[in-house]
Image (cartoon, rainbow, N blue to C red; front, side, top):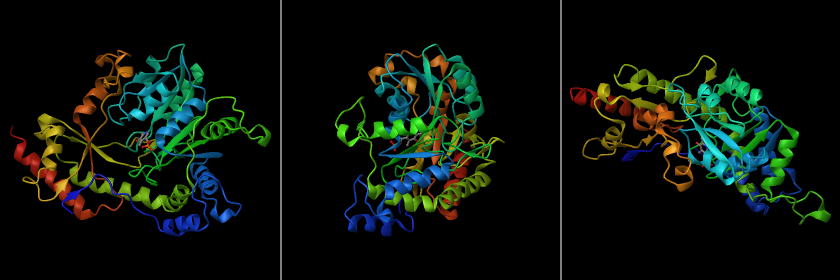
Length: 390
Ligand SMILES: *Cc1c(COP(=O)(O)O)cnc(C)c1O
């Protein structure tokens, strides 16, 4: 391989068997068989909810559609504001816009890179309807604080656990801490089915409503099947994807442990290089280290994060190229006109602005070898040595 990619998906042992069972029995779509052994959507919904420690699982097509579904399930609509972190994937704020609401950005914590509860509190207004708490790069949000603010102002808490699967908050699984939670099974996530997702909730009426909205708001009553009382979506997962998800879930502890092992190896080797800030793990948290993020101080390290990314991709400078990714571009700065119309000033978001400049993540595949980590970390050390005098 001439490049170490940021992430390579790992296949699970039983995927092939389950997929072939679905295929051979002609149940590949979202309609379920009478035979329980072929009903992978039902199985993944039940087993996944059990894994998170909540009552209901609603299988969907992606993390993005899960977020839209969750927003509509709790009733986000025109006139509502939803507080979201300024540094996260655009799916989060798009879900609010697509629901007819207005995203309100809050700055993130400089160490955990997650929503900062003090910033959330400052942005609550009479119009606030919900908070989307995004567990960032594997570290949980300080959920007790978020839940305290939500309770005080009667807000819904939607967790985005797309990259927090396997993370713990005070020994509880992320995804079990708010009113409703969204997961992604995209190729680089902890459980990967190519594309896919899941909404979970402990609340019976939210669970029922999410299932109904995910399926075009068809009625349960066969006589009224084509009578729709509101606008729903087709966000139904396919049986083929559910078959893969189930096989993946069977091995999820192993997958999570691989990421944690990677992080430990990285930290031992990087901790004494000046100008590199490593990820944290608060005393109340277990970080699942979905991606191994670092923050580069240009002066101390000798090169900016942007220069470092280019250097690592330059065939003339490194033996094997190393793929990395920047942290997210601040949402309040997105050029899409809907975002620009919000006119949120940079001064409100010093941390997310700096993390965009300085933050990046290193290769983090489950199957990354210790030799590859040695190579990546010694390359960073060499670059620092050669450039620190600048
Ligand atoms: C990946 C991701 C999503 C979107 O998931 P998709 O399945 O790619 O749509 C949402 N939120 C976060 C935090 C993510 O990392």
